[in-house]
Length: 162
Image 1 (cartoon, rainbow, N blue to C red):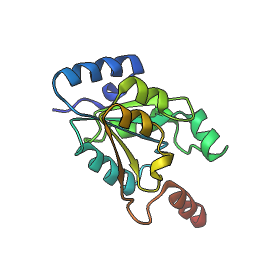
Image 2 (tube, rainbow, N blue to C red; image 1 turned 90 degrees about the vertical axis):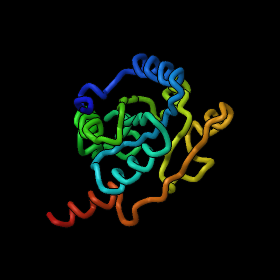
Image 3 (cartoon, rainbow, N blue to C red; image 1 turned 135 degrees about the vertical axis):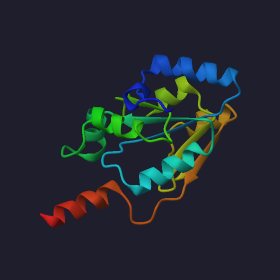
Image 4 (cartoon, helix red, strand yellow; image 1 turned 90 degrees about the horizontal axis):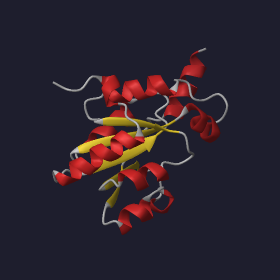
């Protein structure tokens, strides 16, 4: 039986402890991040592929303040607590953490994942944490996008219905 969704949302201190222990057990840690403002099939597909790359998948989500800074004052559509809970309910995700900084670099440096995953829409040299991961012997994986699926496209489609 899996963990209840809310129990999968953790602080950085707790996740750092979990990842340290997991490493002693020979488990591979996978990390990805994003806003995940409106969850869609593209997200699900990417997260399922990310999970296949290791034993534990940790997803960092931008806080509401961080999303506004990145996407504009009308975003996020869904508040951070709800976004975290929705992601935590997915079977492929082991843990979720909300971060307030513009990038997840601090999380990556503390958690030291073996694999860092981003969508293929990110150029390799734009991936935050890439240098850190590769210097530590880990790998960065870019997952192909699910064509035509994006939160921005979904928001535009919803607006056109009104």
